[in-house]
Structure formats: C-alpha cells, structure tokens
Length: 109
Image 1 (cartoon, one colour):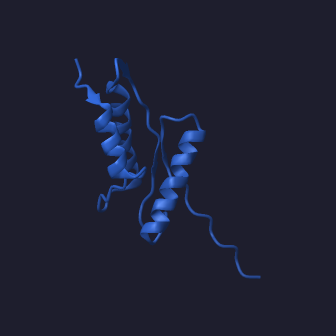
Image 2: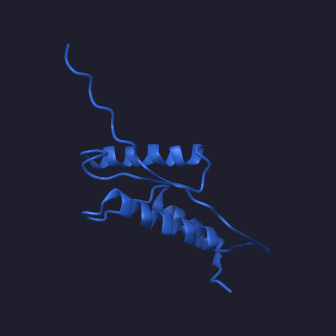
C-alpha cells in the first residue's frame, strides 16, 4: 500500500508554498521542466490522503515558465507561470502547461 499522508501534511505544505511552488532549476529547458512537473502531478494524483475516516485523492495543475523566454524578472516569471496554471485549470485541470511565448510589441508606425 502506498504511503498515506495526513491532512496536516497537506496543510503544512500549502502554508509553506503559499499557493505557489517555485522551483529554480538552473538551465533546464521548458520541456524538461514540464516533464518534472508532470512526474509530480502523476505522483500527487496517485497518493492517498487520510482525511478524517476517509481516504481522498487530489489533482494538481501546473504552469511552467522559463527565463528569459517568459520574463526577465522573478515577478514576470511568476506571472507567466500563474497564467499558464490558469490555462491548465480552464483546459480541464490536472494538467501541466508551459507558458505561451509573450506577444511581440507592435512595430512603430
């Protein structure tokens, strides 16, 4: 039987993450970051959680961004990841989405 985590484990993890899981992975390309997030998503989905006298399962949506393609600052990268996460949620949840490339500025007229 897989390891069962408790509700307290989940609450503590959420408190630590503050709703945002930020991973600085050096020079990892977005496709590799997506694979890692997908592995985590699958592991979370398969992990039973003890909740009172019930066992529940959770799913997760992830947004992946990469420097410098999706932003030059930490705030820009977090915003790009957050937008990608919402795309994952609105696209059916329990998915991993790489942030879309930012729109190019319009040429001067």
